[in-house]
Length: 204
Image (cartoon, rainbow, N blue to C red; front, side, top):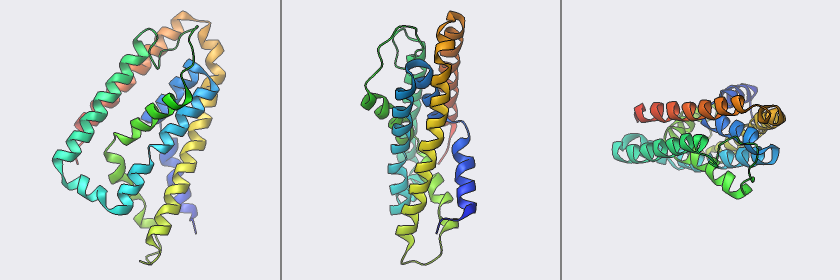
């Protein structure tokens, strides 16, 4: 049984703006509603490896292995810096431009998934988040963690879609102002750069 306390905790975690939210907003503004939904789906699927890691105990290995943690972390840093560049470059994946062809949904989703896959802190986060909400029955631990993880992913997808659709509704207004487009592109680039810096400072 999913407790109300878990639902509230998961909801608070999900609605806090992070890398996935910023990515979904950028796609909503830059490429519209369908692109934002694909972004939300990708970010949600990117949670799966971390849930499996928490379930199998691999998160503990990641936490204790400084080398493995560092490798994954700096791969994530490099990827976030790539996203920052793609927000500034003409024709970049995240650039908001008046005339551009929408990327394929699969490509958008894969980029979104990589944002979470390359964040080693997520595995450790789920290892800490889920156990307090388990019943304590060792025979049902796997089932309970899968249920909690599924609920967390569902909340993530719904909240991200809401963010993305809202951004998509603002798209036409933004495209009417070159100044607004420049400001948003620079802002998204700055945010991804800051997030890359924050991730680089993280420790296992």
